[in-house]
Amino acid sequence: MRSPNLVKMVGVVLLAVEIIVLISGYRFGANGLSMNYYLSSCPLAEPIVTNTVIRALMADPTLAAALVRLHFHDCFVQGCDGSILIDSTKDNTAEKDSPANLSLRGYEVINAAKKQLEKQCPGVVSCSDILAMTARDAVYLAGGPLYSIQKGRKDGRRSKIEDTENLPSPTFNASQLIIKFRQHGFSAEELVALSGAHTLGVATCRSFKNRLSDEDPTLDEDFAQTLSETCSSGDDAELPFDATRNSFDSLYFNALQRKAGVLTSDQTLYADTRTRNIVNGFASNQPMFFRRFQLAMVKMGTLDVKQGSRGEVRKNCHKIN
Ligand code: HEM
Image (cartoon, rainbow, N blue to C red):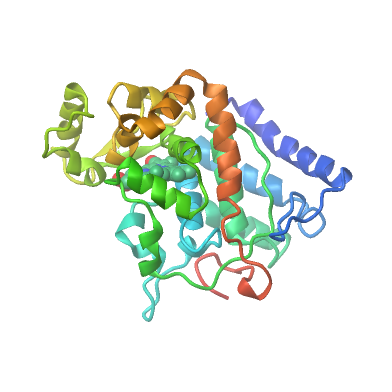
């Protein structure tokens, strides 16, 4: 994680960015979002969220990965509307109980931020905005790019297990990934950039054991052994995506070049000629990866945002009001 003095400055920097944006007369976008959305209704929203993330990552740096993934799984299903946070009830099985979401973590960080925000400005800051802000802070605090995001998302009122079919599977090949991401408006380059989030975190054997049975020319022999040894400890055994699981860097792409990508959906990005050059570009040019990643994250954060009566600001992120 970045040095404590540096991270303490992040909240101040973000507040300064908000103020500059306000002075420069930034207006609401067509989707109703704006950079300075909470400046008058909850001026401390940004520093409250950032301080919560700093505290969480100091205690457990692996949470950076968890927060970035939560935001992705929120936005790809029903748009960025906090639907991933809703708990199942006796009448409804929610998204979070889908097999694809069972290993999501970090809900406690969202809850901690929401608790502070409700004390400071009750009923103002949406859970979907908290997800977007915590993901942004997690990327920066783990060593990645610092970027500004628009706020003003409303929380959705629907969270259904069947909607999680919209998530890509780890067994997807490049064609399937390209189609899935195109459905959400992303190019092949944006697919590769967003997949670069796998510079953080781990996968469990459950997600890559499909690779152990067949002879796979895209998989390095020694690395196949590593996958297999991990799985000898069971389905829940974890393997980092790259050598630096808590640092946001471009080593994930170097791993793909060595045929040491963990998931089928990782290695296929190097195996397929449509995406290989993009992987090579990001592997050799980290600033370019950072730039493309931040642009793609900003875009992902505006997927199908809810406005007006289509949404609400949840009082409790786990329940529809
Ligand atoms: C390209 C399609 C993608 C597929 C198929 C995919 C699939 C997966 C799978 C299977 C895992 C491991 C789950 C487990 O075994 O417990 C994982 C972890 C992760 N994914 Fe993805 N993912 C994709 C794209 C993304 C994107 C776009 C992001 C964020 C922008 C992201 C962020 C993460 C992070 C940070 C982790 C590590 C989580 C942790 O350590 O707690 N993924 N992903």
